[in-house]
Length: 184
Image (cartoon, rainbow, N blue to C red; front, side, top):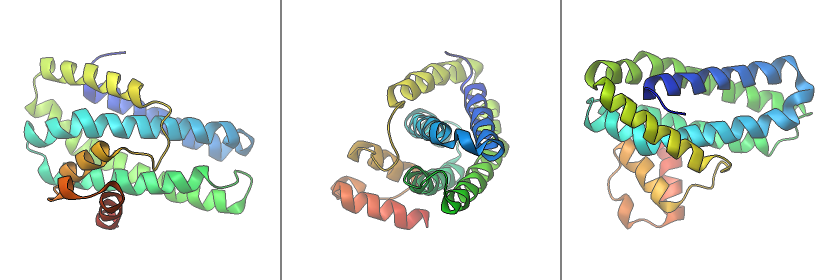
């Protein structure tokens, strides 16, 4: 799978929307659909954080938008962790699913109206294709990872994307705590 990174990201967004719809319309699919949603969102987020956000920040000049998007990823991952730890047949699952869906939908709308159009405008088609290949490879590498299990290096990258300083001197637990606090 390769192509323009913007198109690949938007394809993932549509798939996430489809999974949310499926879980809403067919609650009996939740035990299988929730782990699929989790795997896709984590792989997508890690790939954006490692390949897309640095390019959007450094090459397309989207420093504030990237920081905000990274904060939203951190919030969504916390909600996703709660979702997969909740019984899919409980009322609590509906509450967490609604909260996660609202957060992700908000993030997708913002990203598709700011970061992605800026990338289309400021990065050449060739560069977007290169990023698409890197995004797809990173996404494949991270498939199967679970929320809350980021490595220290991944947390440091998230801190960089958010514009946090001093992350390299922090331990993994301290860094995770600071990221969580910054994301609200």
